[in-house]
Length: 156
Image (cartoon, rainbow, N blue to C red):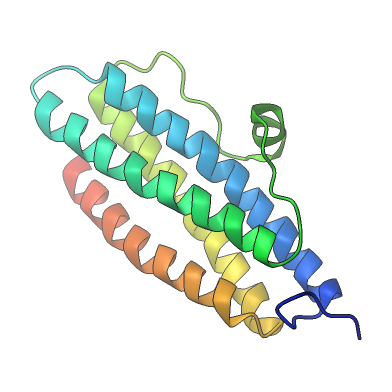
């Protein structure tokens, strides 16, 4: 059995790397959607949404870095070009959205996509004994579930 530098089986790590690169690509598009909304939100809820979008894109930026570094820790290359992100991600770029409520709906939908990918990655990490990836995904899931709940309450 061949192992990588941290002692995990290379064959199993390849499956995780694919899942993590998929998550990374989706995070990058999600991040850019948040930046777009932060810059372009207007209306009576400007101040609260402008601040919330900034909070969320800062958290997404951290997750992007942590996910890419986890891929490197597993001995692989993280996706790193916009074309790779666009080709890989299931989250789509949000272009020319002006309705603040639509922005919140898109962010909630994007987060649900990320949650699904994180749960799949968590399951694969558990199956391969990769506690580092499992812990990272668990933290992301816990934080994101709370935000989805809050966005859902905002949209009611």
